Image (cartoon, rainbow, N blue to C red):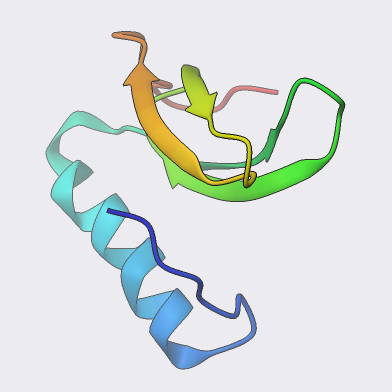
Length: 78
């Protein structure tokens, strides 16, 4: 379920804060990623404690499937 949201809004802050709160017991760090299509064009943005995922993008540049990897970012990582 994807929806467009402006990152400069209170709604975005609430959503990203919830990602952190869901995993606060595990000291997980959330990360923001730009999702690129096979031509290098931006198809979306993903914010999660999961560090990597594969995506399937259709001909209309819509993300139709997300395959998150099992690895999570714990603590300070650069």
